Image 1 (cartoon, rainbow, N blue to C red):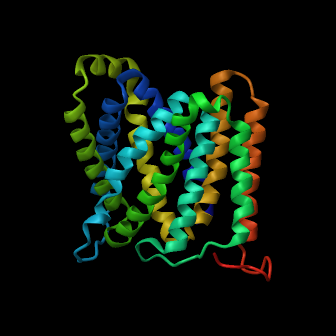
Image 2 (cartoon, helix red, strand yellow):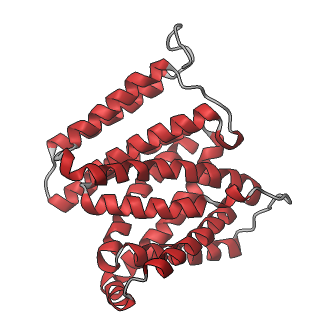
Image 3 (tube, one colour):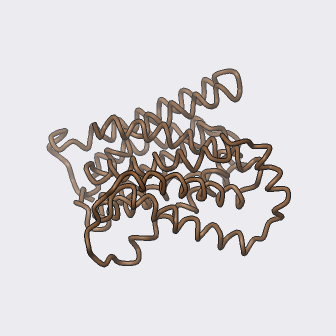
Length: 296
């Protein structure tokens, strides 16, 4: 069940990125981030009214509430990447960022999780995944900054998920999601107050965007955060990330097909190479794959 849910969450992640980038095109990144969090907070608050969850009576460290704050960085980075790169390349770079972050989370036992040390036999799969990104990339110099943003945007959700899932174990999956949107909205409002973009064009753009773009990203985000809160405590971080990759990669290629009306063979080959590298990583990470496993 958790494996299937991880794949579905992956597909939903890419769909959410696409909707958020569409909203940003109408109202700008800052206003879009605020709207996304408002829609998500209202939606999950309604869910919490009907779904009662038992919270453990304990005082938690402040960093358990930082998932939403980091999530704002995720929204900005992924929305920017999707707006300036092809969907498949943005997804590929995000997947590579998630790979590196999830391996790190497993290796250090982040927030008390069980440790899965980094081994040399994981490296061939990571390098093959990197080769897939290189196949998909074009005009490296012009897009270097955007590609770096996409890579960071892929790494940040792994940290956010790790924090939110631990919070979810103590407060409930939907309560944790609501806290995520509360702290995220507070952070987005601070950014809005500092940047102070003109609100008139943003309001007009919101009307032009329509309810699907205006509300879709925030509501879809509820499924993403809640789904991860459910999956992550029960699976190795890298395994959960790998399962989500298939949904993300296929959805990214599909979005490009819809946008461009044709299939770019290079992007398809790059996606397949990326997935092959991640599959190789999973295969070589099995305890009984080889007897010569060495821990770095």
